Amino acid sequence: MSNKRVVELREKLQGKGLSAMLVASPVNRRYLTGFTGSAGYVLITLNESYLLTDFRYMTQAPQQAVGFTVVEHGPKVMDTVKDLLAAEGITSLGFEQDHVTYGVFSTYSEQLAPISLAPITGLVEELRIFKDAEELSIMQRAADLADQTFSHVLTILSSGKTEREIDLEMEMFMRKHGATSSSFDTIVASGERSALPHGVASQRVIQGNEFVTFDFGALLDGYCSDLTRTVALGNPDPKLKEIYDIVLEAQLHALDHIKPGMTGREADALTRDIISRYGYGEYFGHSTGHGLGMEVHESPRLSKMSDDVLQPGMVVTVEPGIYLPGLGGVRIEDDIVITETGIHILTSSSKDYTVL
Image (cartoon, rainbow, N blue to C red; front, side):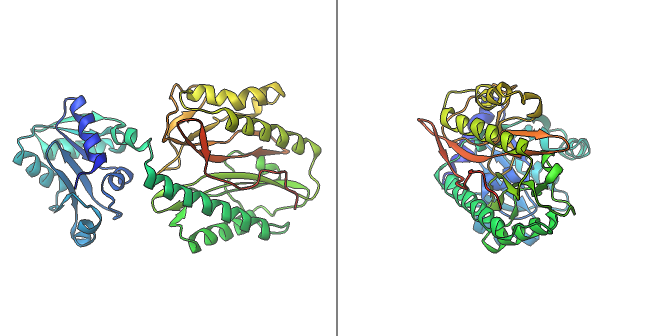
């Protein structure tokens, strides 16, 4: 059976004058093969596709890695790689420089000699940028679970509980409903901590009359969702309601105007210009968004430095924010798919100003 991802990777290899590539990244390994085990390497040549793993996975791997030749590697993995390359007369090998430490590279060099090693970057990641229908279906389910988790949060959130207690409830809910785990360390940032863009849940006791920001996602069948909502408890400082309205205006404006062909820099300006116009530009210090998929941060980037061009099939976040030290902050985030004509929004939780 032909693997479209392998075919496209071979085309990229040929474009670089290479006839073989070794994939060490666990995420890239799963993307290419479907294999969910914790150990293994993928070796792609112009003629063969190998999954090398150990004894523990010799039953599982052939079931998942359809179309791949599964090889139980020897005590030294690179000895097996060298033998497979020699069988095809291959004398040079590309490797993922972004996923290989200097120590591992030294091992490659020693054990694969005289095969020459060619550092390459981003080849599999460039394929992962564009999601196919099956991937989008999974990502929709991951987004749905994030939405369901937020609905659950609204039923349990109250003053007197710690951020960690709420975080644990969210994690349990996601796992009970099919997630492997959360996409990343869940952010539950209350009160003045909501001014921390990455305020991972702490032992702080949630109070009344303050904001709470939730930034979280579900890792479901290998794919991530990423949702942020900010809610009010009691009667917070009116300044917080002011910045909530500004962030929401900026986010909705971006969702209305993002389209294929736009650069990441142009998409970022859709939110940044509005926030700056209200005088809060210095309090919005991160990018508007990022790519999303098997990892929670992928290409493309929606930032003021990004020349990435948005194209159909890409999934990105849109997440402007304003953070006022000592008072609190607001971030609102959705996951979207770039389409031929605009966007499709995967997440659907209400963004109305919510007071509990």
